[in-house]
Image 1 (spheres, rainbow, N blue to C red):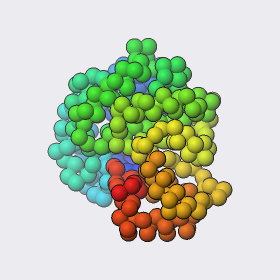
Image 2 (cartoon, rainbow, N blue to C red):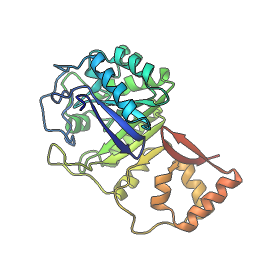
Image 3 (cartoon, helix red, strand yellow):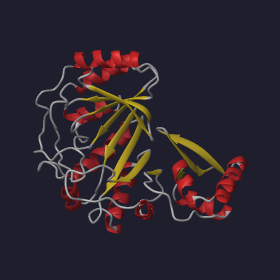
Image 4 (cartoon, rainbow, N blue to C red):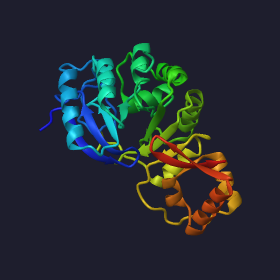
Amino acid sequence: MYNYIFGPVASRRFGLSLGIDLSPAQKSCNFDCLYCELEPAKTVDRIETPPSVAAIVAEVKRSLEEYPDIDVITITANGEPTLYPDLDRLVDALNEIKGDKKLLILSNASRIADPEVQKVLRKIDIVKLSLDCATPACFKKIDRPLKSIDVETIISGLEAFRKICDKALILEILVVAGINDKPEEMEALKKALDRIRPDRVDLGTIDRPPAYDVKGVSTQKLEELSRYLGHHPISIMHKEKPQKRVDFTREEILATLARRPQSEADVAYLFSEKARKKLEVLLHEGRVKKKNIAGVTFYIPA
C-alpha cells in the first residue's frame, strides 16, 4: 500500500511511468483549468499538508524494487507540483536513487519565471510544461489562474529557462473547442514557441471527463491547427483513425518534413502504405533521418 506513489501506468510518450503525487490529500493548484480531470477547486499558492521528502523517497525505493522495469519516475500532484515546498531536496534525493530511470515533471509552468524554480527544474531529465494559450484573454478563460499570474511572464520565464536547460524541454498545448482552436490563437502560440524553442510540442485535446462543460476537438482539427505552429517537432495525440490515408510522392514527403517533422504516430495516422515505403527509401538514401525526442521518434530532413 502506497500513500504517495501510483502506477505504474503506460504512457504512449514516455513508456512505463511510476507517479509521485505531492498533494495526495486534496487538489492544490494555482490554476482551475476548464479541462482538468479533477473536481473544480479554489486556486491556491501552496500545498497545505505536503508529505515529507523522507516519506516519499522511502516509497519510491520500495516501488523501484517492486517495479524494476519502469522507464520514468513522474513528479506530479493533485494540482501543481512546483508548489511543493521541498521540491529541490526531493529532486536531489530522487536523482540519487533513480538509477537508469528518467526523472520527469508535469507542471503548468505557472512558476517558471522564478529563478529558484528554474534551478530545480534544470536538474530533471524531462521537463513537461503546459502552454495552452499565448494571449491574456484566452489564458484566463481556459486556465483560470490566480490573479497574480499572467501569460507573458510565463512565456518570458520559459524563454529564460530554455537558455539554461540542457535537458529535454517539452511544451503541451491542450485544445478546447471554441476557445483556443482558432487560427489567431495558434499564430500567437507560434510566436511564443519561436521564442522558447522547446525540444518538442505535444498537441492534444480533452480525452477524460473535464471539470467544466467543455469539449475537445477532432484529430483532424488538431492536424489543421498544427500547421499554424511552424517548424517545431509536434507530437499529436491521435484519437481516431483518418477516413483516408494519403499516398504522398517522394517530393511531397520531403516538403512535408521540411514544414514540420512527422512523428511515427503521425506517419501511421496519415501516410498510406505506399507513402510509408517511400519514406523508408528516403531514410535508406540518407535524405531523411530519425530523431528521438524524450521518447517520441520523429522523421526529419537529413
